[in-house]
Image (cartoon, rainbow, N blue to C red; front, side, top):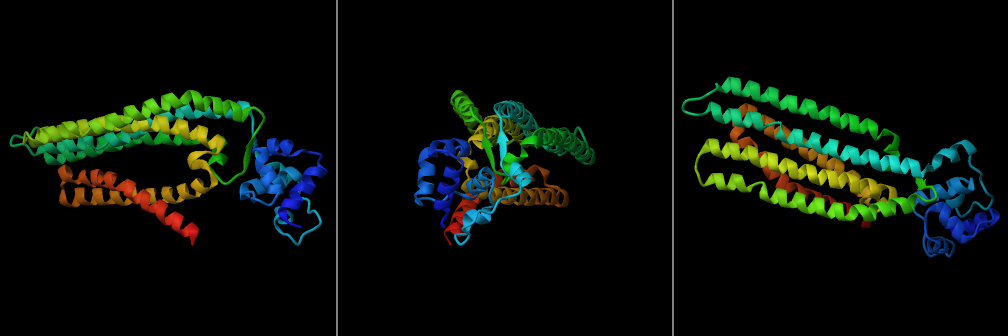
Length: 329
């Protein structure tokens, strides 16, 4: 007996119409009709949900040779599919809204962290230095670690706040209770204009950010160039923060609706990109610190991040291409 016949059999055994089953599975009636007509096959997450809903094992659903129903343990079926109530969904969206501003602030602090070191190093190289090179390095590094020390607890706090909803980022099946999808969809419509506006502002800020640095290059004044570099980092940090505020809130909505980057296909791709991104920025940081400390070229080593930032989208594009190729193979 094939999967399509088993779904029909179990649905009728429970006395449900296609529409009722579709509602319980959080899909359209047409999707259920295609499953039962053997036109499409449910993805793994939906098969797990079907097993939990009907109280049967996934082996029974997937193996054509199994004719007799294999019932799953009641305790395990209760935990197979997580159900999200309208109150939980609302709390999650509000929590991620607050977290978006906190994560943006933490990221802004990390971007600002090397500014003191860069500026003081420039002052130490003046003909009549206001500070010695050793003192500039010491104070600059203390400031750098102080900024990072302020940012890290914010990241950790946001992580703990999101812990009850960690299943949304994992391969744990979940479904929305009645009314949740409508509430989230309505919230998505209201947030759309804000999301577009924030992205436009952030893009304009990031485009403007290098202008002071470019203008200072015509003055042929090293100190002015370094100060404008600091201005560039501040403005770019503001732009990055706005992108984060918009992105985190939009992602929370997409996670609940399983749209955009949070479909099963995109979630697999995202895991690869996260791993590559973590390794990429880790290697860049190692190059930056090695070059800076060994060659003492703090006024030049910042270029590692500038070049790395330009190349990063290309690396991510290559990840997408490689992931897609492996799936086809």
